[in-house]
Image (cartoon, rainbow, N blue to C red):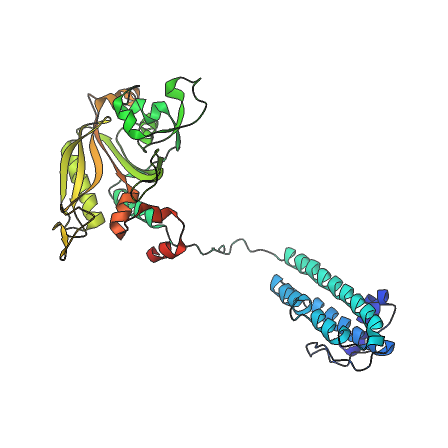
Amino acid sequence: MNSRSLVAIATRNDKALGVAYAVPTQTPDMAYTVPKLTDYSSAALDRVAGECIAACAVESGEVRTDTDLKSFRDRWLARKNGILTQINDLWLKGAPKEAKREAGIRVNELKARVTELVEKAHVAAEDSQAGESVDVSLPGIRRPIGAEHPVIKTMHEIVGVFQKLGYSVAEGPVVETDYYNFEALNFPPNHPARDTQDTLFIAAQQSKQQRERLLLRTHTSPVQIRTMEKMRPPIRIVIPGTVHRNDPPDASHSPMFHQIEGLAVDTNITFGDLKGTLDHAMKALFGSSVKTHFRPSFFPFTEPSAELYVTCFICGGSGKRGADPCRPCKQTGWIEVLGCGMVDPNVFEFVKDNGYDPKRVSGFAFGMGVDRLALLKYGVDDLQYFFQGDVRFLEQFA
């Protein structure tokens, strides 16, 4: 753009100032800098104001993108070192007493005109980008994401082990009915085992029948019944998810935690199949040297039931870490990791019409707490660290 164009811009766009400005002394190729004034006559003020507005108009015409707009706006309007701030300091504050009124009028008019040019550049940039064509065949722009939370990472590792064994992933609602959470899992009303679940009930459910009352699920086992209602045998599913119990938060308890349960149903499934499956899974998770040990237990929805222990993968089963005792296994050399058992025939009775006749099919189920396994895996001694949102703690596991 030549000098004549600059004069035209200044004359055309600045009728509000009532003057036609002279040709700027700075060439268009030079970035505009605020000159110091020694002459505060009306003619001199007209000339320097015209140069400033002409330069601003040229720069505003070069704005195309949001990045250009930000640079342009910051250069002219930034509070600390923007051109308008410099003008205020050099022209107004530096003016002699008798010229301050005239200088102040020109500076205020100049600020209004520059602000208007910035707004026009903003609109022009938006219009320019709106008119750009988009090639939908190009790959999308992926936003970078952070690292997985250690509990979620542990959950995905466990699920991955069972997926390699041919298990499908199933999910279900967190807000459940009494029927799916208890009754259909062989927890009849007033069963003493219900008390151990520390259930959180939804308010204002007294008018409903007990089996229809809503609660926060205490385990992911309701998904087993829901899946058997939809799918006929054989099935092999693994069920990750959050569960809730009325536990006060401390180093080893939380009112919300994560579970992974599994279910396999087919003809002629035995306890030996359960032991073989879990032994393989534990070796895949904790190393091939890990040994498994089953101890009898009780769960209302399995019979027989057992708790699975593995040799401590921290001390190797010795119960000691060097000269010190091993705290995770309490010096026993064994760590309890999950509960399991053969599906109780009473559970199959609730889905008998969908092919789960307890006389023809059998199955096993297991469930484990992911949060506890994450504690053991990463050597953390307080469960609350996982949920306090301290990035300094969580980034150690990235």
